[in-house]
Amino acid sequence: MRVRTLTTVTAVAATALLLAACGQGETRDESGEIVTGGDTDVFSIAVGDCFNDVDSDQITELPTVPCAEAHDNEVYAEYTFTEDEYPGDDVVQTRAQEECLAVWEEFVGVAYESSALEVFPITPTEGSWNDGNDRLVSCAIWDPAGQVTGSLAGAAR
Image (cartoon, rainbow, N blue to C red; front, side, top):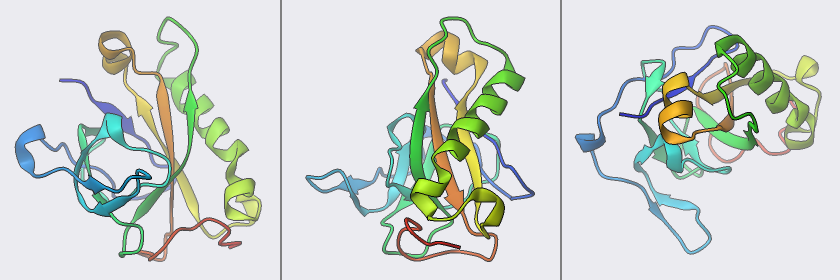
């Protein structure tokens, strides 16, 4: 089974190991936007997708919801590693954090250091890197104050 790692920057209860047979997948419209939530394969998550927290750091699926509904997280950017060899957990986590923060201000409208919002990258594991050619980091944004409705794009907070 291929999995990816969900890393939190601050104390956040996040992520549970979900089995592929646990539920129905999401429904998307022609533009790719989620219109009906469901269990979405972690390798199918995309910029603009919103999802709720799960309880593990090794995940195969995320509980996605339309962003117009209350949700915990939103994918706001992606970064792809170019290395052939897995560079190690520390390098993956550090670079993922750096790349997610590099586009933070453009998305949120204020610098990360001034923001009330938080970021965490969903990163490849060594196993998904080696077995599935997984190099993608999904940058997710969340509000420590609780669930949000709608996108955090331009939230300026």
